[in-house]
Length: 72
Image 1 (cartoon, rainbow, N blue to C red):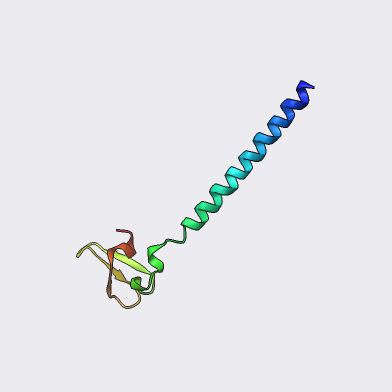
Image 2: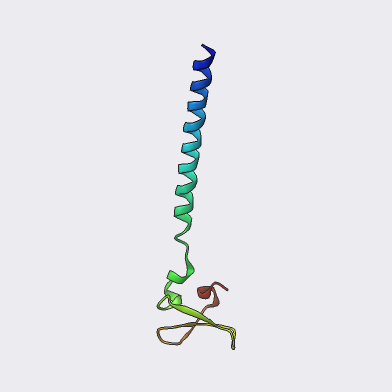
């Protein structure tokens, strides 16, 4: 009888862990969509940091974009 109780407790613990794991993965996937490079103010999205002038530039047209587009 005691063996069956411990097995059921272990099964409940595993199920709760899997639910917790799935919940944290879902939260992390939703948070990854906040990429500043995808915004319209970042131009084409292919940006590089110009270290000489400390500015972020759009590679497509060489215009200056906000430094947050380069992760600064």
